[in-house]
Length: 261
Length: 221
Image (cartoon, rainbow over all chains, first blue to last red; front, side, top):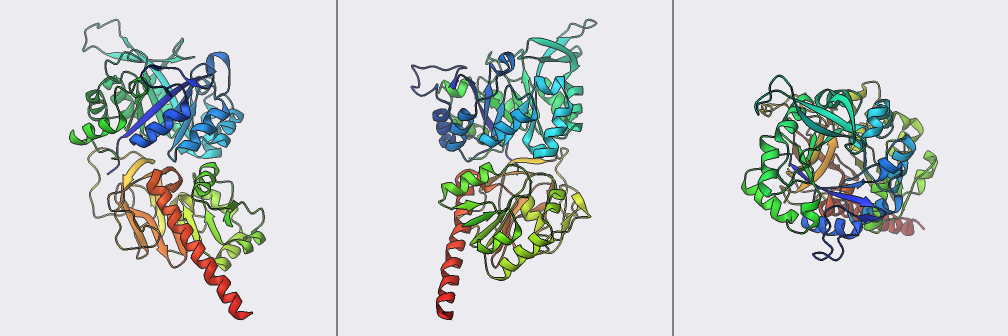
């Protein structure tokens, strides 16, 4: 049976992991290669390197960080942040990335998805969607209809696109996976947005990676069941060393979620 | 030396890295004639079956000659599919035909098993478990239930030479082995320790075949 994947995200700035790092708790938390090595030992299924400043400052993801992480793991490695052209993608892949994640660049120029899918195969192209739930005016009750708006530029720019429609379009243009982040939940540790995840996952026939809000083991079980996610991504709860990947997987297994132990 | 055949089917960095980790020296031949000095040949690949079109008659003949000469061959992903007769993904492109049958879109292959209750997502991306229907050199030491990383939309049928079976929308060949020809649908270079084990198993065959062939040459001399 196909396992649900647990993906660790390394938010990197200037060669250091920056999000949710507790230097007191873990001496090497700032070094992406050291973190990747630890996650690999604990049984992580994939690693994503996200250059958190890249899009804003138009910087490329750093090749040496990618290469340093790639040396540590024999697992799928995705690089996102600042992949704006096919040259950026080529540089990331040459440095050791198996997949690139496109966000703002794909919104600005959807044809880039197709260009990269034709060159490297769809399996190498992830489209990252940052979405925010907007309650429609006519009905403000909790059960009312919700529109999921896509934001660009690290959640700063409204695009007037629906997350569901954009996910469908990205799939048609050759994306191999969708990395779906709930802006509302990101960093809150209040749980994944299962409604958003299920809505997108049910609308496309490619895998959807849920992101934003992971705080407890139960949150992962929820997003894999009611959220229909194929994979779940988290950053800070693993960096802090408050939750180990292996303990999470044991919990999911006991809960009946298929995982790789 | 291992010849890693680069026919433009995507990224070879991960394969090179994994081979380096198990101590194999690798080079990428630029013309088919160079294959003659290979001690082992790897045909990798991700993406579309039509990319194998770049493996022209020169390359096909050179690969087949080396295989007939006993040199170990390993196909990975689309490289496995290429060793079958062809694929529905690109009907006009013939495979090498080392194994019988054609690759079909996942979920569309005729299967007695019923489909999963939820709609099947294609491509098949992620870690899935293997069952070994028979012992093989390639999968030696890899236990039933071991999970490896897949990413593909088309899959090869289960045949007599199937060395590992995976289930996704029906059973398919996750590994095949006949004599010195073997192949895997999963990515051993991205499958952690289990993947490195499979690559090491194959590389051990290269070593054995090399010493066998050099002692045969000594006898002739």
